[in-house]
Image (cartoon, rainbow, N blue to C red; front, top):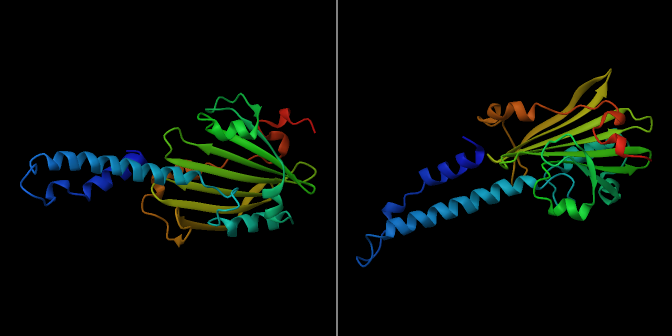
Amino acid sequence: MTPFQHCVTHFLQNCHPERSEGSAVGVQNRPVRTARNVLAIAFVLCGWLVSSIAACAADSSDHRFQWSSDKFAAQCSFEYEDYLKAGKRSFTDLNYSDKWNPIKAEKLKKCQNCYRFAELAEVGKFRIVRLSMDSESGDWLHETHYCFEESGKLRALQSVFNCAWGWSYVRVFSLENGNLKLLASKWQELESGKEISQPDNADDMKDHWNDIPLFKAFADMPFARLVTN
């Protein structure tokens, strides 16, 4: 069962339209109409929760992940606000086709099948890459930020995994001796950003949140050949 299906099922299991009170007129058909209304509400609410996954650390109005963004930026000695303000070039391979192409930001915002895309910004002497990977069903979104030195070597990485079950797993790494070193991590409520204990169902998504694409050099990024300067 996907997180979206789980959300709808949980909503319906805890709602009992057949218990509705009302006048005798039309009461026989009311549970049917109410059930339909409840199902519609369930899909709207759960759809809203899944869509909230898309809010990410690259949005200046979203402060849920500010602590990790600042820690990530500190590893490369720049201000995260400078990254948000920097011009960006975008690339996508649509639905994981591995055929990467440039795409304009305006078109990317409207793209319905851009399940994987990347944004490149230059902040001082560093190249910052945001790699976004989304599930086709909308169950999860995994965003990874990379900080590459002037030499092209990876220095730091930030991973934000948002799940439709209502939680996020946020981590910040440095690269030491060719391996990722965890600097900080938090489980958070998806909507509020409040720190929580590891959710009981987190392991059901471990194959996704534990799969952090690692590129130790900018030249290893799948779209790097498209960057000519």
